[in-house]
Length: 353
Image (cartoon, rainbow, N blue to C red; front, side, top):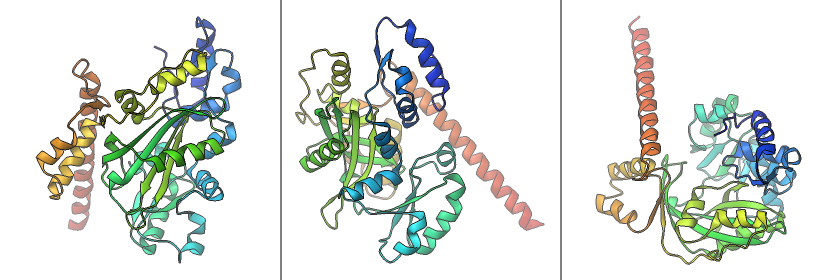
């Protein structure tokens, strides 16, 4: 096991030290956006020892920056509604509320302060107040129309594109629930068929001359029926990669074999077996909230997790990652409660004085 700070050039230096000791050229699978960006910037230095499946640096920069991606998507007639913070005044008459405020690139400070992808605002006054509050945590902000519909209207398509930008494998899923409830990431999902999402994903990344792992999330607007782009991910696996493999599609193995020039796996076609993906802790949190609101019964929750399942962390063979996740979540909750009590106590003391 080799340890390095994945947010800085230390990662590149460690990979360069490791490379000459490898028996053969290895395939790199970056797992987070910071690593994707670093590998993109230093790909030539690492090329003697590693296969790196990424498009051009320009395309990586566009895909990792929501602001630049939305501009690219608009130029290429893709469907979404979004404005930059500096354009809010000019676009105020065309903005449809509610909207979501989020950074083009999520920073460590944003995650620490906000703890979710974005903040929902109900009107222009709330939007201006929100931008003023969060501006210290992100140098730029994007305001995006909140597409009507629940989490189950969110669809994703994962693909792998070879050196000629040909899609060698694809897999379509949809969310069942998410956490946090309003602007969170998927806490459970299932394999499904949506040819429109698949075709738009392939068309977008083919146009970009993309190479490597690609992911596009789209949401069907319940008011219009159209599918709207929410976000892309590029160059790395996502939780849906595991769902694809659970559904009998050799997703990452396809990339591995392609880069090494080996025969491709035969199982590369989605057969719609109905496999489900579950983040057990977050799924339970989301289900409890829906139950508290009267939107979900216990039997309804059981039905939503029936069938073949792929878990993010939980496994009877190795429960330690799941237990560790619960432990860290409990410690964080205790610190949050203690901080709130301390803050409330200080306010009470101030009022007494």
